[in-house]
Amino acid sequence: MARIEARLAELGITLPAPLTLPPGMALPFPWVNVRGDRAYISGHGPQQSDGSGAGPFGAVGGSVTVEQAYGSARKVALSMLGSLKRELGDLDRIIGWCRVHGMINCVPSFTQTPAVMNGFTDLILDVFGAEIGQHARTAVGVCGLPMDFPVEIEAEVTIRS
Amino acid sequence: MARIEARLAELGITLPAPLTLPPGMALPFPWVNVRGDRAYISGHGPQQSDGSGAGPFGAVGGSVTVEQAYGSARKVALSMLGSLKRELGDLDRIIGWCRVHGMINCVPSFTQTPAVMNGFTDLILDVFGAEIGQHARTAVGVCGLPMDFPVEIEAEVTIRS
Amino acid sequence: MARIEARLAELGITLPAPLTLPPGMALPFPWVNVRGDRAYISGHGPQQSDGSGAGPFGAVGGSVTVEQAYGSARKVALSMLGSLKRELGDLDRIIGWCRVHGMINCVPSFTQTPAVMNGFTDLILDVFGAEIGQHARTAVGVCGLPMDFPVEIEAEVTIRS
Image 1: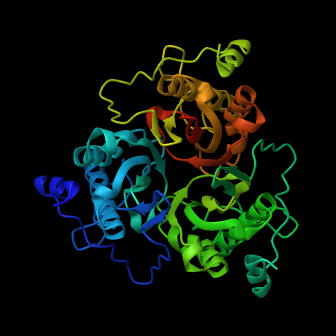
Image 2: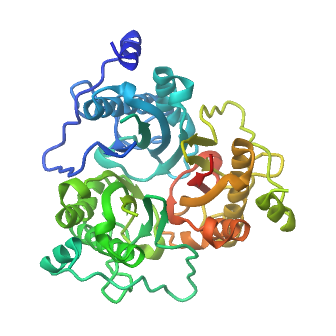
């Protein structure tokens, strides 16, 4: 078994199915776009195991707590790993995380965006380890996200051909 | 005639002139910055054919409708192609779209950002086709943009030297 | 003395110490993440010379003026150069700025984000010159940033191995 798959199994993690879209929603782009040795990862939200969007929905600092949003950010990492697995075939092809841009749907003047994003970073480091998993990161508060997700994250990784 | 130029002519598309800035506005950066085999594209807004900013202006979900903003996002694609044409000389040098980051000026809790961004993606796919045109994408709602544009988009493409 | 170091000395600029975090804040990621010939730079805020966060804090267009935020953006450039110096050892290893993504904490419908970001761009061009310093740029208004900074900026540079 591949190394990252083995680690996911060890942690008891199952990756979710592809995002199921609400009626009338069209997303004419891939979740992962490979160009040369880089995989560009579209903005992902939290998903349930069947691929449907995972709540809670809404703005952090409003109806969603920081603790809940930490859990949502962790789920975003799993959504992303699911997309990467489907696109790359083997998650061991990821040889380095490059950048991670986290967008937190929040009330005005919210400042706890890093505490939310740690849900993503903690999972990636736990699965990939410090060397491959390490990434430059931004955590910004925004006023609207698709499907009213509390968190959406885009990223870039470098891969083995 | 180059392939992409021919496709634009076929679609009846003319690319706009460079953005004309309002009095007192200074933008000390290029619209496209080439480094090696990558062209990094600055945030672009919708422009009229003479280069002036194209309305409607304001927040989507407020004074601007989703349908209007779809049209604005399509215009942003044309602004970007105009900048790329001026920088690269030949749009056929673009061998792959990498990532596209769309920012939608919107009212709080707006969720239809993907429907807006489809105006950009639909045009790029129509002009470049599925293989070269495909891009990773993010659509985020923000609370302010330069010139009160409803949409601003930044991107990255890989190019032939 | 290295070229960029000499230029900083000429301008009378001292780079700040690493960001000191408020109690309870954990940032499990590096400020600069090198992958191949690219250095990915995490979102930075303005810092004082001892590394503590530099005010004013809050939303531009509200309690913070555009002029003050221009100064904050300039300080962000210095924070970033401090991180790059610590990671790369020698700032002369930077052979080209690629992209710069500026996030301005602002009141709704704020439009002067480019005037704020010029504080960053003016400093980078002054230190690195037009060829190496030139960067693609985006300036977006957001509704929340870590530590209530008025400006946060992420970037990417290409480096000599």
